[in-house]
Each structure stands twice: as C-alpha cells, then as structure tokens.
Length: 262
Image (cartoon, rainbow, N blue to C red):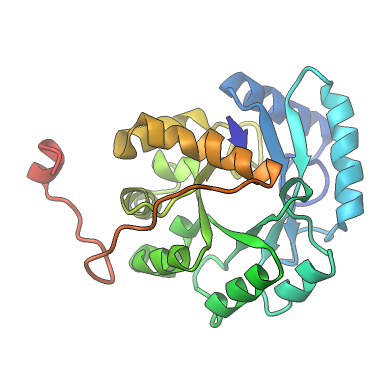
C-alpha cells in the first residue's frame, strides 16, 4: 500500500515529535503493509514552521537514512492549508507537491468550506497542479452536504478520505459521510493522516477493509495502491465520475435496506 498523507516527519509540526517516535511510526506502517509513505507536514495553518521544499527534501532524505534502505520508503510532500495565496505559493514553489510531481494536498478548515474554493482549485489546475482535497468527511459543512464534494470531483478535484473515518474512529458523522462519498464514487484515496504510533497511527489496512465492505475489494485496493502510485509517479488517475446525489444530503438506507443490501 501507499500512504499519501502523514505527519511522520519528525519535529516539524503536530506529528512525530522526535526521531524515535517517527521511527516507531515507520515500523507500525511497514508492519501494516505500507510500502511507501508521503511525509506531508502542514503548511500555512499556524502549526508548522513552514519548511521550504528544499528543507523538506533534506529532512526526508535524512529520515530515510535513519529508517534504512530496506525499510519503509518515505517521500516528500506538504498538506497545504487553503487560502487566497495558495496559487501563488504553488506557482513560486513555496510548497511541496507530492514526491515533487504535480499533485498537491489541500486542506479546508474543520468547520467551513472557504468562499471561492472552486475558483482556487481551477486556478491551481491552470498552473498544472492537480489538487487533492484531504479529509472532507471530517468537515462539518461537507458532512451536512456531501453533494458539494461531488461538485468538486466534477471539476477535476481528487478526494482523500482518512482511513480512521471509514472505520468509525473519527465518530459517526465522519463515518457516515465517508461511506456516502465512497458509494457515490467521490473517493480517490484512503490515507492515514497519521500523527503518532499509538494515537492516530499509520494503519491503512483497517480502512481499506472497511471501504471494501462498501465498494468491494477491487475498488478499495485502487484507493491504497493504483491511485496513490499514479500520484507519486506523476501519472494519470483513471476514475469514473461521481454518481449523482438526490438532494443536498444523501438519504440514509433503512434498516431493511442495509439488511438486504438495498
């Protein structure tokens, strides 16, 4: 498996606090079957010191040496907080795209969808950036209106859902939203968004298996291998468009619908 979103890089944000902690996270990830992991420290949200791409590459290189050549492969990246400066930040290479290719993680605030988000995504695309919206299922406004995520997908935005959301570890609202997005072809990646070895650990397999129960094993595997591989190599993701929502909020299946698969 390939994890495109983690805070495993030590001493840069609210993720791993020490090299020892980061190495323990690497061991947990490898034991779970993760072969490659993007190190994506926060940028421009007040949590990290906003390390420049060259520094991130150096830190990832040093971390890889500490892990060893036979262990988990770590790759550079960023989780970039959305703002009206995001296009200029990307254009002037002040942020790190995933493995230096053309995909970039973009984060919304926890409670709202910023005004003009569609325009910002469009302008990023004009500059050759393929935006990936991270964990929309944990955003309060999108939980209430998941069809808005589908509208982003229709405009060429990719979607990453957190593995722990699918397993219910971020609560029922995030789980319900994640399952709704999965059923409507609005998820392109599962990722750990790992911060610690014990709390928010780098475990992807449980989310993969939970997603498989919703969309089938073959489709779930695409979210942790095929699509992430395209990201880290700069390839093209082949995905079907979103299935239409019937209204602003998806109607939850009834008890008998769940029981009989309807």
